[in-house]
Image (cartoon, rainbow, N blue to C red):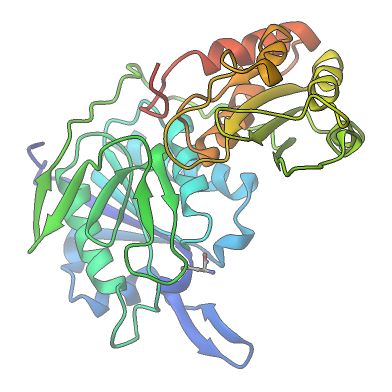
Length: 342
Ligand code: ASP
């Protein structure tokens, strides 16, 4: 367990979500400040600083907001005043934000813990108070990295997926053991995690938002896939069947994806199955894609694959077609924050 720097404080950054919701005439909307949320758990306000960054439903959190959240966290890291950071966030897109922060802040020297709730923290039966309390404990104890703490589980940020819409245990750790559980106010470790991106983050890298996700269905038109070119898309994640299978008769997805790659679009193949891996070299239906330059996402979550692609394209900015695809391929062949088993 990390020895908690007692002279340092914690930072709570609020961005909205159900946890901060209050009833309004239009329905639930985020309205509570970070301090108001801390008051519901009688937290020691003298050890926690607060920033009210947004009051947003996370359905509206996009790459622009990721950049703002990451910048705010970076300022806290650089101030050297904080032992850890808690970010409250809506659950609906929390796994995307956690994944993107994992890439942008991969060299963090303190833990960053995202949390939220299925019910507003002011509701009597809300899970928000336990989640916030647990996250504060986690932010004091964990090793540096980006995590989600929810329903008593601590999950690596780039391995989290929201798998339940209403239950309190809304998130699962996919293809990676949970890091810890919080039980009766104590952290119990389940697996070791130590950040493998050494170095310092002085500035944040760019995010290229021109990425799309396509889930294949039997009968999906190959022209639909080719159509992403006209929408200025520079990278797509394709959720294929099983290990990453695609149609190669009648509606030829191989041909459509090759067409995209020839036009400079980076193609990442992943699986529609939540667990285990994609592999393009096994079946004849998709092996051709490997030779054409498609990247297999292996055991990454879709959220991690999408955000890694945006981040990799940001890093490849300015490179032309094949050099760009090569650079993105190199980035996908590395594990930056525990997102992939290679
Ligand atoms: N719609 C909410 C949000 O993601 C749901 C939640 O926070 O649980 O902002």
